[in-house]
Image 1 (cartoon, helix red, strand yellow):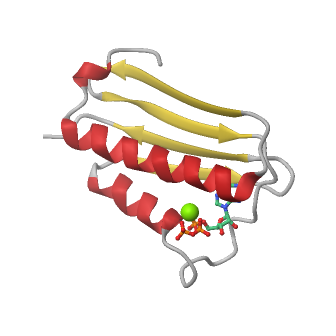
Image 2 (cartoon, rainbow, N blue to C red):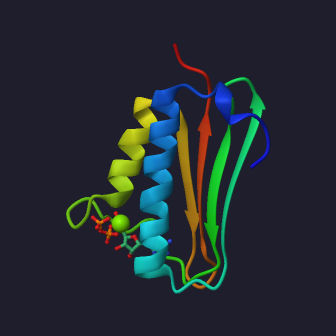
Length: 106
Ligand SMILES: Nc1ncnc2c1ncn2[C@@H]1O[C@H](COP(=O)(O)OP(=O)(O)OP(=O)(O)O)[C@@H](O)[C@H]1O
Ligand SMILES: [Mg+2]
């Protein structure tokens, strides 16, 4: 944690919490990771980046999970609700990083 989390609105805090929860769920369920890092940096009041990174087995992002499950699409909705941006990078054998960029909303 880097920066002052008191600057975050409660809706942003809740959104970030839910995304972190599902990202960690997915790591426990799918990743077979040895190392997990959760990092948050707040650069300006209400604005920053949250990153959840694992060194597990990764997965192919181009596969369509729309029918089977709700975790990734739920994350996307959560982040859209708070006006943030979600980026997931992953590749087989190289782990997964979930990044949320967020900024102050009114
Ligand atoms: N950190 C991760 N490491 C490896 N694979 C992952 C990771 N996160 C997601 N996946 C893959 O992406 C798929 C879709 O994830 P998603 O969270 O949408 O569904 P789920 O976890 O299978 O089910 P649900 O979240 O609905 O209980 C997973 O089934 C898994 O194959
Ligand atoms: Mg899931």
